[in-house]
Length: 533
Image (cartoon, rainbow, N blue to C red; front, side):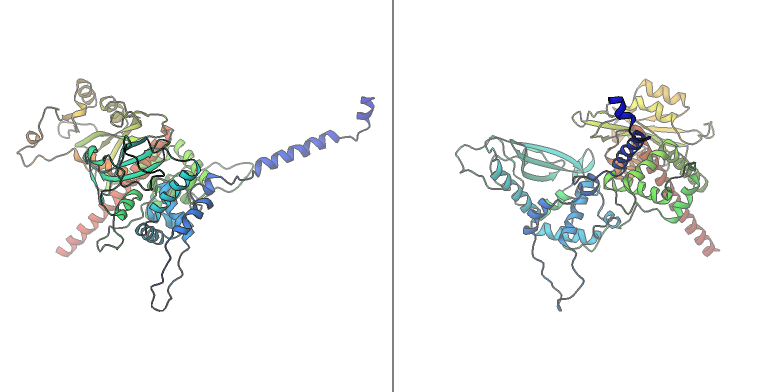
């Protein structure tokens, strides 16, 4: 009976039903519905719930124009989104001009205006008060913890952190972990000066009546200092509300000008044509500019502005070029151009290592012995006499510098001239390279080692001969140059290949910038010679 029923069905019935089912599944895969919590769209904007709590706390704007005119004021919601975008991504203020939010000057002025009005402190207090009403807070026990951070640009409260500018941030939290106090001091400030056994300075009032017994630990966010300065330090600004007469030179290091693109365009690998067609690829210059934007601003891939390109498209192009060795070739081209224009100083070279944080871990990472065993990475760099990078090796932060000497010297990206008696090549190293292993590696690579001994005093290290100059400081300056690229300052890449690609790109841009400076100096010298003639 079952066979008879099936035999009466029209021919091709099952085939047509199967095709319709496959079409439905294909359409569902190609057009997935975006969730409201998609990080690409809403992860770097203020939510409606947070805006509902922030909006009543904003100060009322007073039009100071004598005729009540002037340009229309930018919406507060757009400025709040821009401030939150800078906070979450860590990009520069001027990088906001590449987004659809609002101009960077408008967002920064509104941010300083709200800091002066105490808006962010009120939001903090409102959040803690709401948390107290919902679940309550345990005031019997709370913790006091500090953290040091780098401040490369200095500021109001900088201090030396291992001979580098930094600040110390001390947080006070309840037993559940909610922050209830904050204080900012210099990085070299003694910790006991930041601890006071009292309840002064907590951002919200205690929910219960004060008892005779004080809590076991307390942290004072401020000791009479102005609230504006502390909040500016917390969010990255250091200057007062009024604009200073002397301002730093504002640059846009993420922009790719025509002169730089003319050097890069011939080096871009050719794409293979697809026999089946497909969508046309995005413009190479747009993709390269987006990669440089990520490198210099340090933002997440998902936070990349749509005006720069789709994050997935830019990341795929970045991985493609990385696999093709494009960034290494770019670095080689920059060094070759500098060698023709100025000349690479092979006589005096320097090598040193630097450790950076790697919160996400990944390849070539390890526990940092100088950061309480947290995940970190070490990059060993070799530079020539002018300070341009010749080689970089990456490994875990727990790897000693002596073990990275050989891979660093073997990884020079351009052809190295053979040393001779008339043209020797010297290698300057610090006390971390003291040992027989380093001396053996240096001899194998035909260098003349200049290693400073650990027992040598700084006063004795200075030579009375005026012809002898300090040579090793250029590699320390190279660390500073590379750390200006915020994507390198803290490593967020889990893959070693992608992290090295960013390093090679930063080295290439550094070489091209030094070529431009060298060419400008030559033009000035030629002009002076013409005037003298």
